[in-house]
Image (cartoon, rainbow, N blue to C red; front, side, top):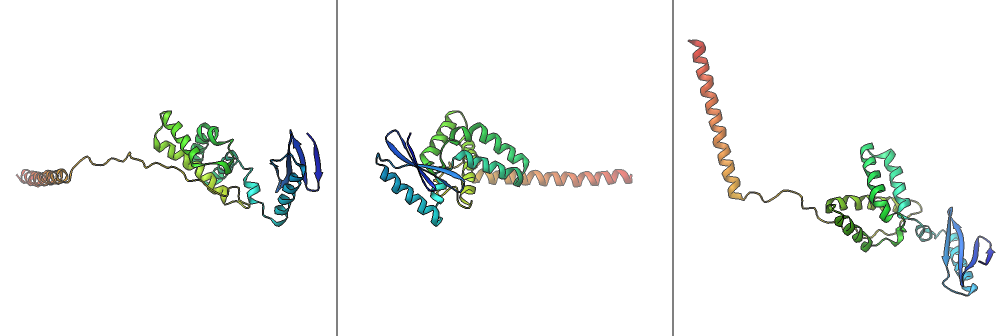
Length: 209
């Protein structure tokens, strides 16, 4: 693998294609020129160094960030900022399900289709739509926190396919049935009050006698 250093950047060849390597805010960035011509890699290196000099590097940084790194950041935040029980549940959920599926993926490459794939996999494994919602919401929180970083670790958050939850009980009684229940309850309460009054009167008479 041939390498040639040019100031802050390095140009090297992998196979027949030329690549550029440079450091941006403590992160090593490697990009392919997609070309077998070294001059194309030189031009790419100069463009990247120009962006670095002008501070126009958020896209370069975000391109390297994985979902696993964002999940680690979220757990570190949760450890000191939310209830220990909630932080513990998040960690269990992340380690058991979210990280194995998303952890290796670049956050910049995350798509709605990939999120839907995760949901289908979890439902196929016997989990409810509500459970998939909770797990995806943890990942979405991690992405949102990454977007708030300076410089941002996330530039764009994909649409999350959250499913409406239908586990709320409804429709057991019609309006007429509810009115019948109300009338019956009123009669029962009235009878209970009447019987209580009669009982107290009888008890007083016995006491007097």
